[in-house]
Structure formats: structure tokens, C-alpha cells
Length: 267
Image (cartoon, rainbow, N blue to C red; front, side):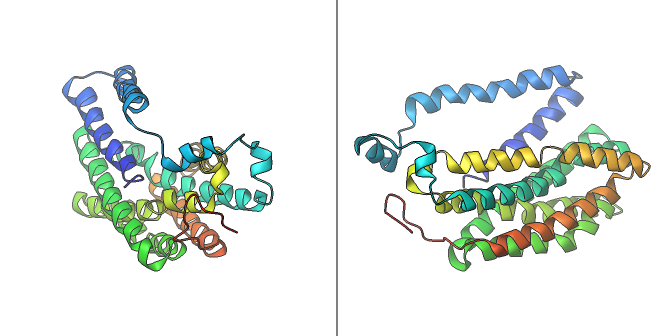
């Protein structure tokens, strides 16, 4: 449920893109203004959403340990989480960030068509996040991530070389079922991997370190596309195939922590 909020927001963003550019005829500055508005939800979160019982119990238990003390014996786990999040971010951003550019620059599609395909992409992401996230409760976190990552491979040709709008839309939907299907496991997996004392810090820290390592994804894809004569389809397909295999391998190497109990001492 948590991870599926991301494609839901992306879905609304696609609609905003269509309204701002196609309906109102405005530019990227207006999109930035629209993008600021959801940040006002922070005021509601701060005033209405309660703290978790585990956090409240920790606050009442005595002085807090430093991050270094809390992480003693868990540095290898942090390194693993960081590398896993690098692969995950390369997987997600590699399939999304340059996709509208590919549709406009290589396929020469109009704003309305790009919007529809982007909405299909995010509809698939919502389905994948919910289904694989729920499935991981039965088969385990690692297995669900591995299956989703490997099932992305046969979707790649349809996604980049569909040949028609119908096939491209089907490919966009299916590949995001797999990409965000794997991602649907991430919030639970990162929290289950984290010691109680740093559950508020470690998942976000590991995620952002991984995101930092993957930050050049769009730039690298653009550079490679320029070197290949603007062939975004080829670059994105090769990128996604390589990252899917890398992600499946990292998930296979990691620990299985499904069913961890928060607020209890664990080894």
C-alpha cells in the first residue's frame, strides 16, 4: 500500500502534465508550481497523523543511543541495503525517467498520447505494487522481488519495440507491473531488515545512498542514446535487461526477514 502511493502520484502527475501543456498551453515553470502544491500535505501530516506506538515506547525507555552505537554489528547490512536500493532505483528510473522523452523524440507522439501511455504505465505500477507486495506475504520478500525482476525481461521488447500504440501501451503496463511489483516489497523489506533503534533512520539512509549511486541513470541513458543516434529504445531495453538481472542476483544474495516483529529484540 505504501509503495503504491508512488505510482498513484505519478498517475496524477501525468494528468497534470496533459492539463498544463496541452489544455492550458503553459510550460515547465507552471509544472513546477503545480508540483509544489502536494507539499502542503505536510501540514496535515504534522498536525493529524499520530506517532507509531513503537516509536513512543522507545522515547519513554530512556536516553537514545547514537546512530553509531545503534548500528554496531549492522554495517554489512547497511552496505547490502545500499547496493540493493541502487539497483532498485536504476530499475525504476531506468524505466520511467526517459520514457516520455523516448515517446516524443524517437516516436514523435503528441502530448495527449504520451499522457495516455504514461497513465497506462502507472496503472500497471499500481497493480504490480499491490499484487506482488501482497504475494510476498506468502512466498517471502526475496522470492517475490526475484520473480518480478526476471518477469520484466520478456516485457522489454513489447515496451520499447511494440510497433503500435496498442502494443506499446500493453508493454508499458506490463513492464511496470513487474518493476513496481518488485518495488512493492521494498518498504516492508527495508523495515524488516532494520534494527528497532534505527528503523526511522536506516531505511531512509540506505535508500538515499542507493539513490545517490543511481542518480546518473537518466543522464547515462541520454548520453548512450546520443551516441547511438537517438535510439532510446535500444538503450532503455539494454539498460533494463542488465539491471533486472543485477537486481534479481542481489535479492537472491540477501537475507529473508519476512515476519519480523517490530518492538522485539531480534538477532
